[in-house]
Length: 498
Image (cartoon, rainbow, N blue to C red; front, side, top):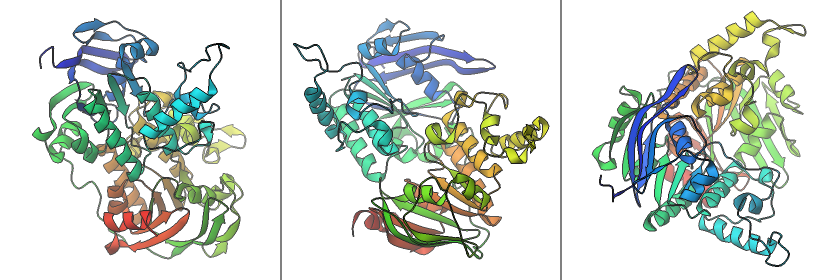
């Protein structure tokens, strides 16, 4: 790659954290107007490398060259001035502020005479930016009131607003449905045509092969290879990422569903979903499919007592259940893995061990006193069973990779010893190797008689793991598919048409 072709080069980048070398002499170059995918398992160093590039991480070795000139270590603001913007996997927004305030934060249009923010111009610019990502939102809505997918699209619009030459996208589609993903791909194609370089981090290999021109594989903080995307296939790429060949990602079923454990009859929450009815059997994985805002997550929240429903009945083992709060749900044998681990799944400032046991202190306490030996035994067992990569159980959970954080959320749910597991996007932000491990665990739980409801926006996941599928559209169940009826065309037809 010549200097003229290469807009950005990272040379011998190394970074150490206490007890671990996150990056080890990384060398990679990026060409103008291309989509360059960065792939690897959780903990491979992808996000750390991009945080260094975006000015979020300092204290590294090596050099960064932009347009052939060395780029000194600097802040996020300095990187933005240099033309480098980043969309983060863990969204960085201000929940108490409006959509417009978040999108234009730091570059608000000012009134010429009064020297204050020009709200009319602010709304105009925000609507224009949102339109580029195919989003129709009121600029005055608060970010905290948006769905996670809407927040993701707002963050993408914010990155576009900087008119950057290089945009880093760290798992940008992780919370998006198929329709929003298509919008994202159209936007990427448009940016590429305008000469913008996209660095695309994703665990979804179908996206990598669809969008990327080149791919770099990281493993254990080192570059394994950089090549044109058409020089590898999916099996080869997976082998490079994990250092081994993976068998079929989705495990085969060995057991059969048993007796009915859950019945939902006519469940309704005004303005959100209506007349939702279904049953769930022991040993069954029931997939909930649909587009953003279809009502899947909202049903899960009512089942776990997070939201109140206005009508309908929930029966567990044939008895009507009263679910006023999550404590009621836990007592009745339900466990939840929520869709947004940072907001509702974890306490980032606490250790991974405390996060696991915080909702399950009854299992390791004697009266009001936590028995540390018992707590440590429970935590060590979950770290082992879920293959969580951490230096020790006292490590702050915010210091773990996204995939390992997700495993901690799953461990917390499993420590409650639930009979019914509610999994909302259970593999969001998890690499292909870790996904295979989670799928194996889910199948093992089902074969052991646990009942699972899984919300997923990934069609391969829905098709590969579900025994039955319910398809949601605008708060109603529009399709009920048995195992032999599950295919992408049928699911999308029910999700998008009446």
